[in-house]
Amino acid sequence: KAGVTQTPRYLIKTRGQQVTLSCSPISGHRSVSWYQQTPGQGLQFLFEYFSETQRNKGNFPGRFSGRQFSNSRSEMNVSTLELGDSALYLCASSLAQGGGTEAFFGQGTRLTVV
Amino acid sequence: AQTVTQSQPEMSVQEAETVTLSCTYDTSENNYYLFWYKQPPSRQMILVIRQEAYKQQNATENRFSVNFQKAAKSFSLKISDSQLGDTAMYFCAFVHSGTYKYIFGTGTRLKVLA
Image (cartoon, rainbow over all chains, first blue to last red; front, top):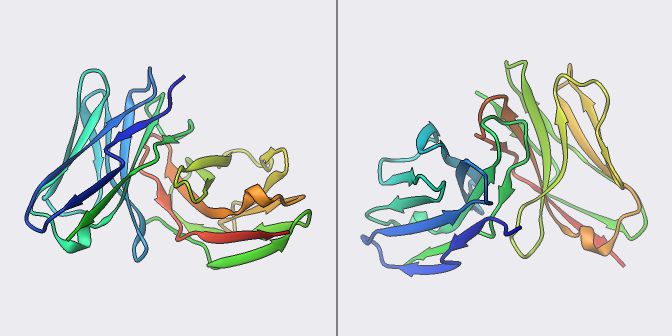
């Protein structure tokens, strides 16, 4: 069974540009959540989606947005990139709606903004 | 607001010895779950162990066990017979029942010494 797949693995962008990151969950999983990991702030929650609906959003500016498709694949978009957006972006998928079951994480997308 | 605190930024342990990683959390919720995740240099977050808050019995997974003290809001991880492959960052996480909005601690970097 394939794990959570995040593409691309590495990305370098220039300030002011926008970027789209993709996450393909484990087959059958309908819940996808996103996290930003930085040395200074640690792991911070971005969004949570279930069946194409955003259920929760973290404390990030409106430049960060996301969506989930009918096949449960999810994308997140960051517009007008800032240097501080450089981070590892992790996606996690889960089978059920709710926090009790295990969340399986992808290997992340390393975004560098220059 | 829910918070998770890991007070040990770094720890080391000799191979085959036992080590305990500390975690405290703060919440006003009654229904929640606690997790320990491991993040090796490959960046893949891997579930180590989970604990349902409504269960008094401490969770155990092979060499890994927890000491869950609900009243004290403490959730420590004990690793017995430490192995070189246990070297990683360990994150304590809290999630409220019904959501996948994980709240992570800042992590403890564990190094197992040969």
